[in-house]
Image 1 (cartoon, one colour):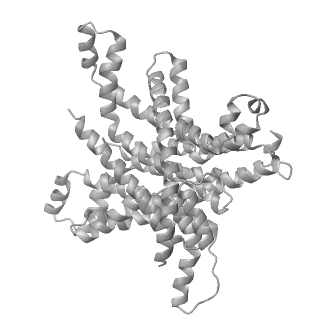
Image 2 (cartoon, each protein chain N blue to C red):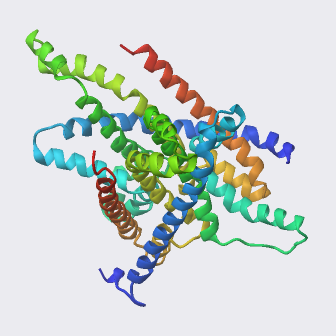
Image 3 (cartoon, chains in turn red, green):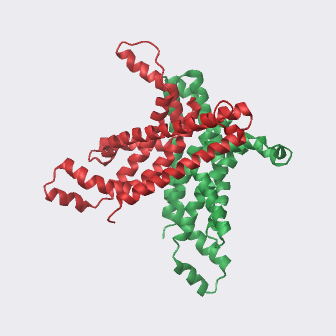
Length: 230
Length: 223
């Protein structure tokens, strides 16, 4: 227990901030994922073959390649890509992107592929009659989306999105390889300097379990809220 | 685009794929047994066995695979007692530590898949077997298991693909699998995109093969 003391003698405060970092990366990645899903879901549902192909390419490649490989691509290729773009605008200095941004972006793209699949499934399982009925009632396209499709879609999507959240949360442990100090990295540092890896990695496992447990509780409440009337 | 590097690195990466496939097949093999045992325990009426099985799958599904590998590889070596037993021969090798971690992890997911497959078997099948005077043991092996295997094929196919991606974590405990070699080439040449394309294609090819194999089996065993 001494090892977990707050302050200079223990690793309690370090691990606490690391947990917050894990949460911050997960939430950012999840939001970036939603952004990608917002772009790629319509592409996958589009009538045009080419757009379909782009959407399918994204979800197939990202879901078929290990997360770690994607992270290495961003870690080693990220600043190179940014510098290439900057050089087109006449900026030739070295640019280093911070580990938080690289990490959340890499995990975000992965999470986005899963979210895209969830949204696609949810929209496709809405009864066709709903679209036809709102059309007959003369409801405009964007109102139809916000008032008819979205509320029904969310109800169907929440259970699966909670799976995506769990995957995203666990995937953030992988960005410890880039040096970002989240739970895994902090445990690695603590284990190295105290020579007590068993304790610190087990404690990391407990922290992750706590995060998944608490977020499941929260999501279950949301689920109840959105399925009122069913 | 450095095509020369892509051509040079291809055989190296293909060589590393052998290790990835070895890790995958061994951990799936052991994981299936673990999964079956825990699925049966989970359906047991004894509350202690039941809770134990639930706890196992909850812990392994709720924590990242990376933590599990680190606990087994770095953590277990710390216990003095373990170092003096025969187990140490296995636990000092990163290769076997990775396989143990993968097998336990996939075992947890597999137990959930099998459990839900067993639960969807209509009670009528078992009742029919009983009324024909077939013993409980034979009902389990000849009726429940074949139906459960068929039911769980689609979900298990996904699990195989997830596990294949999971083997990439072996590179964090010094194993030179496909991702490990890819990382090595990237960090020596600083050409991440080229290496990503080659290594990613190999992974995608494996995903493609697994996906179609499962599809074929699903068709073969459909009823």
